[in-house]
Length: 475
Picture 1 (cartoon, rainbow, N blue to C red):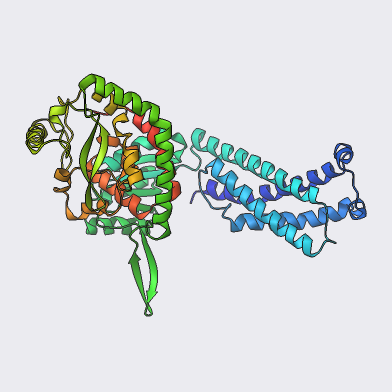
Picture 2 (picture 1 turned 90 degrees about the horizontal axis):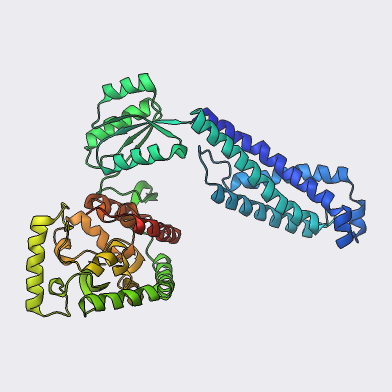
């Protein structure tokens, strides 16, 4: 833990105390100011007789109580960077809780203090003062981090692959991350790591290759533990990040959690899907009408084609605007002979023009697309009819991508984990890389989503989908 983090975290305690105290003091002066007296004169003898000295003595105790509630609510967690809006919400929540408790106590003993104006105004001013002071401290801490590198974590990356590249790119782009990469080695080499540590220093090590052997991982972990270096690693697809320690018949055991999408989680997600799909259809109906008309004028009917996909361990028809020429489409609305010809041509394209490895395929310069269809696919307009799939219940707003049966047949056993929940219109893979993401990385992200699902997580993925759609895909 950096000294600067400890300093600023400790500094927040007295600063919060002072801000709450000043807020209460200002509320007191406002209550007895001429301006407020003209609007709401003091009527209770108790308020007139409440001297400033007695109020200050009470306020010193109340301020300490509010800071104690802040601590219970986790407002003094040590972090180098904090999200201002999230922290402001937590301040508001803690002040509201403190105010509620104080009102209950005063109700039980009115002799302490009876001015509701001072209590409520003091609470509002406390939120404003505390958040302003915390923002100022955060800006100062951020300035020292960026300009003086005070509080920067020196990071060593070990391994190869997309995850390492993504970390490097994010840190180089975001100077506020609080990290500086001091080295990147492809494999575990303790002697080389020790040299880097002596020359540049190491605060954290991230092992970012899921394929690393267990022995190498243990060796790296032991080095980090012995040198008091924070160690993080990317779990393999056979590992899980979602577990719980329990006592079973007097013995400690680890229970692997499957997904929060059970029980109420499943119910809440379905309600969210129905509402979201209804809103989506309403908002995008003009675009869908234009897309349908453009497709019909460009290449006739059908405007919608049913693309067979696999999701939640069963096949279903996924609705899409037809972006391919009719002779190359395949689905149940076409004859068996037509489908066979289209699939044979697809197999030929996969063999000669696919730029993806593994179970999935992606055709470079796909000759099957119409002019209108290429535009619709470029901005994912062709996928808008999937809102109706969500209403039917065979898809969700957020989830793993639904793949075709010919792709799913090539899945390894562990990759079939992504079929245990409903597929989604969008998901972690789409906002992280869209069609340019490697399949192994896509599966890893989808499994993480399954194990760590939350409704708020779905909202954030949906909000991130819009800029991801505008990002140009690689061919």
